[in-house]
Length: 196
Image (cartoon, rainbow, N blue to C red; front, side, top):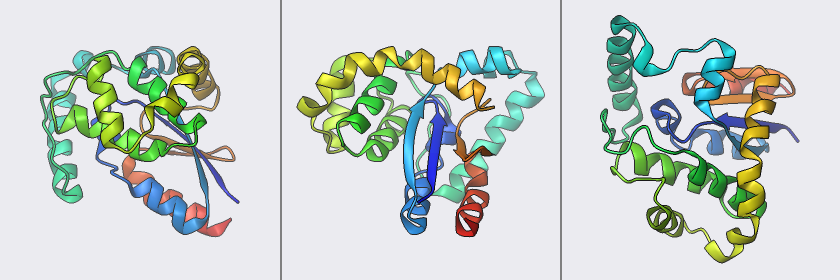
């Protein structure tokens, strides 16, 4: 059985616009997914990336244009200027990791968190809002709670692990060392899994 290490940030519109395609591909190919949210700003600073706000104006303009095209293709609603972005990514990231450890649907929670940022103008750093998002995604908060402390502690090591694996952006998919960067590489990931 193939295994996908899925590195991402809950603050990425590109990760949001992937929708649930990763989960559908994994199901079709009989693969498992390990959800690994990372600190994208650390990745940028350590792996040669530039935060969006620091990019040249032409890159900023292209990013917005690209997001508009991707939004049309995905059919997902997208607010290009969300009310709570950027925000503290750690609480939501920890909840996703804790949900996976508790056997909950980490994929559904990940997409719900991303949708909350990019389509619903919700503050994912707010504890009550995050709990509401999780419950809406069908997450049993009582099952998740015992795993939260370990999940919070795992955030920095998971980011270091991502960099050691050659991850430098979000979303990023790794299968046995084979890397796929961006939601627009999901077809490539699908082809790779079909050949295993």
